[in-house]
Length: 386
Image (cartoon, rainbow, N blue to C red; front, side, top):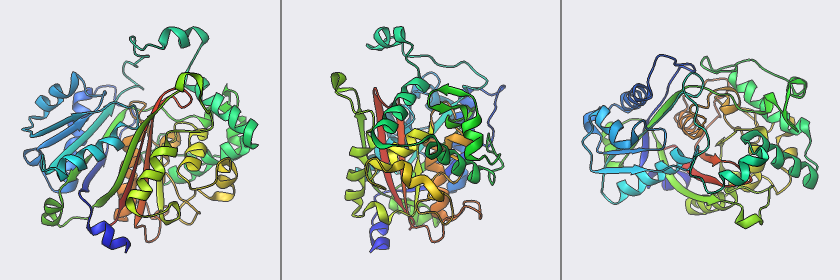
């Protein structure tokens, strides 16, 4: 039944490429877009001349027209979506819909960023909330610390449980030669690192890296003609979560809408998922997302991660086997693309042997964008091994 559904996928990811560098001081954003795009197309066995659809986000230097011009693409479909780090997960859904409507057959999605060695972006100056929130010292780390404090208060989550998310990420990252933080850490290491915003320590936070990545989404006919391993796109859902004029639940995320919708669309339940790529900007992000995606009951995320549940290859739910944003890569402060690429590796059975999930057939990818606790994008994909 699972393979029957996968064979009926409306589109397939056949190319995936993650830039190997984490520091790129002499490389422009346009060059990174080109490098990762060419890498993904080579992985798919295609060229720029085959691309008739391009999708990107706010990281495109000069906007999408400039990137399309730089790459020399001739297109019949174009899309730009910016919901933060979840954009690239949502763009796969947009590409699938365009392919199913016959608007394109080979869609390229690229992302790039240089926050480590380049100019960092600040808050959008025209945000209607900036003047109200910045005056009180609102920050990314502070926002997520509030979530962790509330989760601890309501559900008894402990700093040790938060730390276990980082420990699992580091156990995976040691096998990734490109990881920004390849050293295995312990719970004690996490709790002993400097406090950033209570209760979040430095090792509860993601890395900052340059780099980028790209994927190629194609129609079933193109996929069959290529004869390459890919990932069938089975279901997708996205939303915007926000404060509802102050009626906000700090222990919930947009995944509580997108996760159940995507799973129902795929005709499966959370227990059917073999591997999950979950946005991990902070350790609390993972715990809350696990609950909202229905991998565990509300309030039980801390207990779920204990005793190695997230560790590959044999944990209850292996996640982020490349080391995730906590240890591997968070290019442009947008981690959705690397999460997507590692899910494709798992479904192709191309992950590092030490973390490859046995018989991986179904994977879930979830992206988060913006600030949990205020306003954020959320996007979920269900992918299958054809």
